[in-house]
Amino acid sequence: MSTGRNDQDRIDELWAEEEEDEARRCKYLFFNIGEELYGINIVNVIEIIEMQRFTEVPDMPDYVKGVINLRGKVIPVMDLRLRFNMPEREYDDRTCIIVSAIDTASLGLIVDTVAEVHDIAPENIEPAPRFAGSERDHYVEGLGKVGDRVSVLIDARKILHGKELQAIESRT
Image (tube, rainbow, N blue to C red; front, side, top):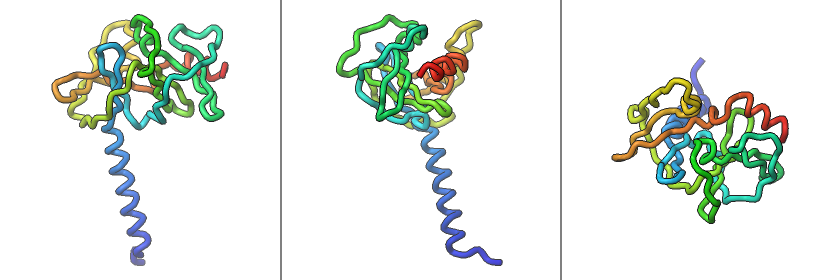
């Protein structure tokens, strides 16, 4: 049996999709918190929205600011400044929410500003230094070299521990 043209076209499409997925895994959305530049893989980014009014949910960690209604979907919102143990600051017109996909859930990440998207080849990502007992070990994917800068790359899937995510999902 010979491979028909339609079969070859489908094979070519699958290869192209795989190459596109690989290229997306090397792209990071960069954002600022204070003077520091952080990155998150665009595979985990659904969209970037302007700061919105949120509804507070009782008994949440201080860095979980509440929930927003985004086109009928309730999404928990976390202030990354507070999650990273940085001082709180007033939100302004440059403050954004990065809506991220975490497994089957969505999570809004409040950041000071969104910068740009950069490609980072895997060979330009170093493992993050590990410190005993540091929560940072859970959500830092690595350190990405972009030009002459080094940026912290965040693993969106690990920004919340499993129990925290379950608690938020059960209250929203």
